Length: 613
Image (cartoon, rainbow, N blue to C red; front, side, top):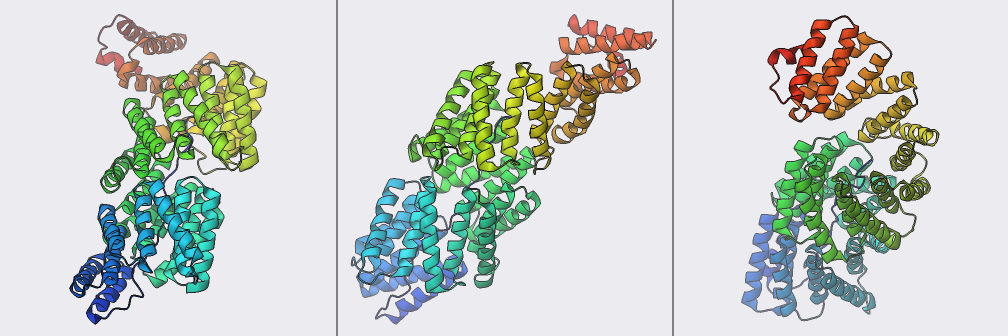
C-alpha cells in the first residue's frame, strides 16, 4: 500500500501584547500609540509601523524609560506580525534592556519567548514563557487576560513538543478566561477558538474542530472583516480540516481564499502564506495533481528558508513534502536527500524520540522500501514504531499502526513473511480499535495482511481480507485511488491462479477504466492489465475480445522505449500465435518478424509497428 502518512502544518495564532494602558505625560506619544493600536488591529501594517516609529521618536525626546520600552515592544510585535522575526527579536531585547522591570517586563519577555518559539529555539522559549506565566499566576492581583495569553503561548510550545494533552488543557483554560473577561465577540476569543480547533485537528477530532473553526471565522469576519490576516489564518485551518476529511473542493476554495488574503495583507514572503501554500499543495496531492503541487511546495520552502532559516522545523516540513512529490513521481534520487535533511532538522530541534521524527523516519523508510533497500527500510520503520509506542498517549495509537503496517510491508517485500504476519495482524487490530471498523487505514492494514497470505499461497485466508478491505475503501473519500486499484489487481490475480477466470475477468474489466483515470491511458500498469485480460480471453478462445486488448497493450509497449525487450518480443509472438489460429497468417508473420528484429537488436520498421496497432 506504500506511504500512508501525510500531514500539513496548521497555522496556530499567537498573541503578542502591545502597549494598551500606558499613560504618558506626552500627549503626542499617546496619540501615536493609540494610532498604532488601531492600525495594527485592522491589519494596516505599513501605517502601524509609521505610528510605532513616531511613538519611539517622541519617547526618545522625553527620555521616559517606560514609554521607550513600551514603544520598542510595540514595534517588535508589529515585526512579528509581518514575519520579520529577527527585527522583532531586536526590539524586544531593547525593550527588556530599557524596561523598569515592572508592568512592561513580562510583556516583552513573553513576546521574546514567542519569537524564540517561532524560530525553533524551543529551550529558550520554554524558559521565558514559563517564567512569565509563573510570575503572572503569583502576582498579588493577577491579570487574568495576561494569564490567558501566557497559557495560549504555552499551548503552542507544548504542541510543538508533541505534548498534546498539556497543550489542549492550556488552550481550553485560555479560551475560558478570554470568553469570560472579554466577551464572546472579542478577537482574542476567536483566536482561542481557532487555536483549540487546530489542537483538535491534530488529534483527529474533526467534528469538534470544525465547529470551533466556523465559530471563529464568523467572529473574525464580523469584528475584523473578511480581508484581515486573522480571517486568513482561520480560513487556512478550516481548509486543512476539509482536506483531511476528503472535502477537496471546499478545501481548495477555502485555501485559495486564505492565500489571497495573506498575500495581500502580509506580503509574498510571510510564513503564514507558506502554510497556506503547503496546505493547498496537499489538496492537489490528494487529486494526484503532482505537477501543480510541486511549484507550490518549492515556493513554500523558499519562504520558510528565508523567513525562518534553513534549520527550522517548518522548513523541514517543506523539504519532507517536496520529497513526497518526488517519491510519488519515482524521482527517488531527488527525494532521498530531502527526506534525510528534514529528518536531521527534526532530530536536532525536537530530539531523537519526538513523534515528528518518527513520521520522518516512516517517510524515509517508505522511499527506501520502494528502492529495494529493505534492510535500511526495516530499520527505519522499526525505529519509527518504537518512538510512537513510547511517546503516544496510548501505546495502541493510530500512528503506531501506521508504522507497524509499513514495517510489515517491508518484511513482505523482503520475503520475510513469518516476520511480516504478526506485525500486520497487530497493525490491523490497533487500527480497528483506535479508528473503527470502517476507516480507510484499517482497510490498508487488512490489505497488507491479505498480500502476505497471497504471497504464501494461502488463498483462502487472503480472499476475505481483500474483499473486506476493498469494501471499506469503496465507501471512503478515495474510492478510486491507488490502494483500490492495486488491491483489485491482486484479488483478480488470486482468482486467476485458482482458475476462477470469470471472476478475474470481471475485476480486470472494472479495473482498466479506474487505472486509466488515475494513471493515464498509456501507463505501464494499464498496459499490464490490458495484456493480462487479453491472455485470459485467448486461453478461453475468445479471440475477438482478446484482439483489441492485445493491440492496445502492444501500442503502449512500443511507445515505451524500455519495453523494446524480451517482454515486447514475447507479447508480439503470443499475439501472432493467436492470429495464426484465427487464420490471419500474413499479420502473424509480420508480428513474428517484428519480434525477431527486437531479439536480434535490429531497428523495427514503421510498417511492422503499424500492423501491431
